[in-house]
View 1 (cartoon, helix red, strand yellow):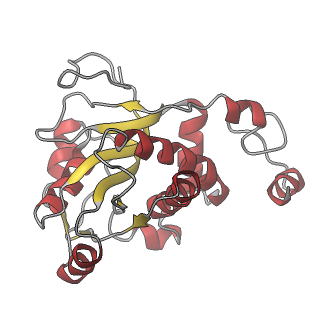
View 2 (cartoon, rainbow, N blue to C red):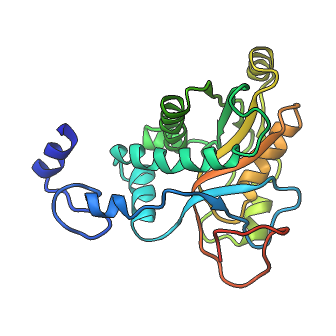
Length: 244
């Protein structure tokens, strides 16, 4: 109620239909997907674990992500966190005894300095929102951990093709030993899921996966709020995909 009153006071408009009122009106929120799907990029980076996403990156979802990440519209984290939680839920649904071992959600790190410029670690905030929802709904231990660091400057990915993105983030992440030791000691059998807001070429997710595998924390899946819609190319290895 407080958020709704504040939106009306500030003269907000829905990012989906442009109606005055909520920044995402009830109708547009209801239209968001409630089911995640496998979202293989094209081409698929070698060795990428199965990526899941709940929405395609267009329309209202794109406006929500951009607003949350770049325009200080932090209230979007609730809706985006719900979409990410659905992707995580789908990603671990086939694991043996999924309720017994904790989920370790690892946010993909921002470029160096990006968080300071925004004053807000956008992806980490979404992962915390998703974790809170999963705890409430599934009554299981969900831990948000961030043992990844960007070890060298990676350029903005905008405008780069799949090859350029892969080269840009190659060997750009590592796991600090102290953070790793704490994670391994407390949750030696936890299921690691790499989390991001948008899956485009899969290069960033694959680099995060590599950094975790290098220190003995292999991810079981990638989970994202949305995946870009791609045209042409071949599908992933024998699975349906969200992107086209």
